[in-house]
Length: 634
Image 1 (cartoon, rainbow, N blue to C red):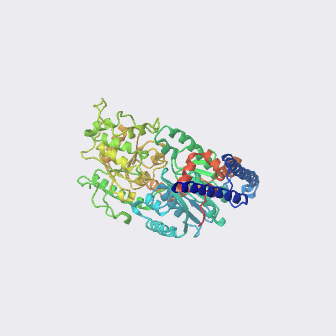
Image 2 (spheres, rainbow, N blue to C red):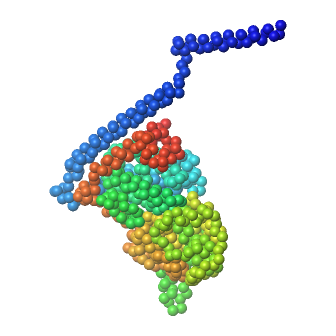
């Protein structure tokens, strides 16, 4: 009986299976379930979808090209407008839209950084906007600053300063201007924000919003782009700056090519070439005038560019310099008397601005210091080498780290990855003493250099200095005005475009020891306090001499050159062009490059061809290719 049950059960299971198959086939014939497709059919569907997507992008590219030809027609027509017709046919007259001295004109300034990040692209545009607002009606000057999310504020802003809303950061910035004696000016200017993101691989802030669309048409008169190449690397949609504004001035702040050459690996040479071409592209497409702060920068658009320092220093530094000048004159008058007692130069003054009151009491010994961002490109390797050379008991360690004591090179390292190889293979072990001439230091016992600043490579720099037992004392980031007790600024950096710290130190009547380099050419005319060098031996002897002597007080003319009033006048003069210069600098190629840039932003396939750097930015920041790089308003 038990054996007969199993065949019966198997027959029941077989009948159930047949029933399920018949039912599923009948349902499929009525359209109630999805029929099975072969692999070939699936691939054919995907191919058709890809062809449709490709046709859609092709249509978009065609529309872009049609828009390009229309823009070119409008541009040619614009040359015939009355605005481009000089009065009385004098093409040597000043092109009227380029005249910033007219206080009835509206000025829009866009920059890539904001306080409390104490970087040059945050401080200098802010002070420029405040001084341009002087003498203008309220609201005639508008400053656009990047707004970062809270997580990125913790990365960028010092001392754990964060803001929950843009108006809080605006209040902080306006209070900072009040402390800089620019209260009346800040009340007459507008401060606006655009959405941005901090890209760690670049160490910079990039817009994630079309800034041009934020600017009202009634304010679109003159535009000053601080770092135009930086602002437009990823701006690929919307109106061009030149289409929105009557006149666009670009101010070049940073030598990005120098930073790229300091990156590890031989690929830095290729990056440098690609980046230089992109910079030319951005400046030609979006600027009417390009102002380079110094001659160390690359050539962008020769027909549009001019070299001029349009930066000044805060009033705090000049007030400190005035106190130092009084102290120096008192020392000289006392030394001129037969039995006069010469007071010691300590840098401790009876009165100085209130912003410096939080400095610890007592003079700092020897008075040599460096202030700047903690990256190797700022010259920290030179600081380590020089500080060791100044201490004869450390020369053996120096030779282990720097086997050859070659003269200081003013050009980028060749090959550019040479320093990277030295830094990434671990710490060198002390080697046998090499036959090199001992440098004549002349420095007192216990000499060291104070180093102020923070940055992405700070820990690595401190670690290398500690391993070599270099006489460097590292501190955090501070306001330069707090260091009024120091006597000599050592600035070995040759990656700067124009060192703001050098100008501030000279304004405080300090000695500045810097490389003879195009980035420092503006400071050569500011008296004997700017001491230059071309080799390590000259740097050592110059530094030793500066520590033993007193600085020269600035003359009234030299002091005026460092003010923001003089810098604003230089900006006005550098921005002006004649009708002939303007017409000769404009070409159809400018609009063509802008249209091409827009086409790249509209097509993911073109963006892939454009470069992996663009896709990295897209991936890191979660920007959808089809969103045209503009986040939704929600």
